[in-house]
Length: 210
Image (cartoon, rainbow, N blue to C red; front, side, top):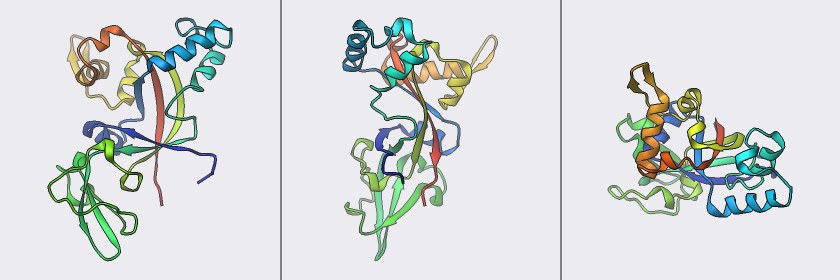
């Protein structure tokens, strides 16, 4: 891998992990932090970019916003953090099981890593939470293909589908946008959709590592 390419961990819940594995999820949205909002506001006050409310359609301002993105730049990689456990250890390899895939076949549930990389003991019942997953245990690597900032409610039907959201029925048919809204509320709370925060839109493709 090119030395200039950086890697960062990113957490996904089990439903979204399955959507990535199925090829249904190629985008994720994450709320801009107060610190990031303040830095962009400061930059706009001295003329380095447009304010967020004015510059979302401006390519130059979007380029500036991307400099503050905590997930990296286009071409950088994200390794997925998810709940896992060490199923077994052998002479040369350790077998890891992943909670998101536990309803699937055994070959889809597990991955194997070199034993010298595995620093955890066998835990047949206890899952390691996603936030504590080390890099060596990750089975999914993503390459960032685009980054932008937008308002949460500006998501399109196509983008909601790219988020891996399920559909929900309404009077005009099944819509991914409604499914995404429900999914967002389940993660961030009932008021989070109405507050319509600024979000990072990170587009990616899966990288098959040797």
